[in-house]
Image (cartoon, rainbow, N blue to C red):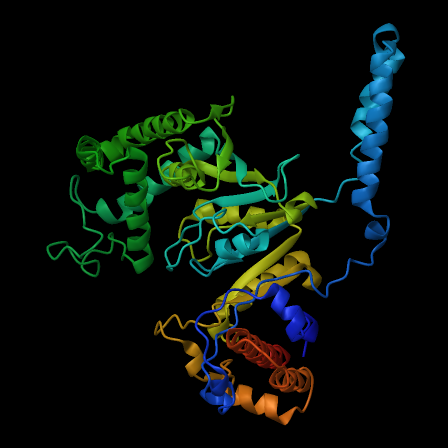
Length: 504
């Protein structure tokens, strides 16, 4: 069991200093009842620095933060002295020296390491990034299985930004003209394969089979449609609605319906119109930011969220603008502050695998190959028998090596199939009956009472000490006991998870 995962057990006096607010007391008599009858709280872990030590590698032994601060101070003093003496104005050599010194004063920088985060749609990739960066509204997290990561989004350091920053610069990189045209052609082909079959002007509905259409068996020239063909055609139709901006625009909807007729498709007019609509959407995006020569757009000083009544852009608003033209976007880069980001870590949130868009799949695979590490987010309930997860782990190890592949288990408390607390279920995997990760109140009581091993023996001792304290406030005593029981429960859950890791 990895006991270092948990914070040290606090004595009552130390706990009381850090004690959170508690609700109504249960009363001293309640604490003397059988502990299984006392209602407890589920643990909610908040990472802290307690019990952690700084890395023992040579880089941290040099105290880089202090060294950089000292170098900046000394360099700035030299620069100010030369500038005040007019040496830079009179001698070119001094001016060059000041310029070079200004480059060196920040000191050695961290190696840039990019971690791409992959997983099924809705598995929690964005939520993981928010937790890692301690910014709950930074990435666009979704509570449903609907895909919310539609394009690659990288989170990297903005020089000078504080670790507790709430502002970001957002840089949207647009795909080039040739790729945009190729995407439009592919969507037209996918749409036409289902809708334009037989004589000119004849089409088939992608949502229901045309009963009057000639069966493929009777006419070998007609290719049988697969479920994938129909899904691709649906995605193509979504693409057309997106670049035509038909939402709440009846005129655009009418124009699109006309352009989707067979004669406009076969003549190439639909393709030309798609390219025109792409340009219009990019111009709409550029109205809200600064546009460069490649049509990339920069938004500066964007807050995570706005207070009510503000009419400027915030991150949700910028994400919405990007979502409206996602097929035209190569990558979104969000530059901001944060401890991990300042130390050279770059997190790239990739679209969920299982996507039918071939262009997006290709872009995603390129990002995966270029990254230094891969973080695979997987659902705990299905992790052992998921072919998709196994495939992703295998491909990651092949591309990056075992030591650069990280697996994060998510959704340990929710079953996708039932929506209920899966901790009440049992897992049957590879013929082995495995107990779930739930730890009942009775198990907590038994662990504390048996005192067989750490940390349960220490927890039992802390509870005994609690009863011996005179003039003890009931609310404090109840809250401290809840804290110890939550610690016991979390330790037992961690032990069960480690047992599963060994079996895997």
